[in-house]
Length: 113
Image (cartoon, rainbow, N blue to C red; front, side, top):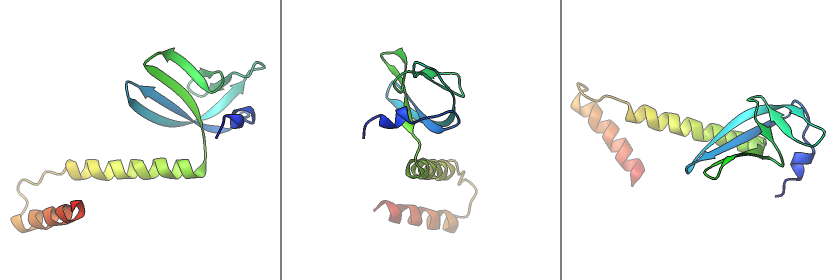
């Protein structure tokens, strides 16, 4: 898939900003607020993109990604998954009855096998 979609963008369209820094990637949904005569794209955060890229330094890449319902669903599913994992990890089992902790342990262990 090429970047032809960039040429069809207009003010008010939704796009994702992919921010990659030292191997960590973050996707943020944003709105286009302006497209200049030369084709630069400005988003809500104030960042300016040329050919879909916003340059910082060699270790930091910021790129526009096309918004699609499939990508939005995937991102929401990943966020829900991460929330569940965090919630499980954050549980303090001290003081809980042994049988209850054993049942939780067995469920988690079964899922990992």
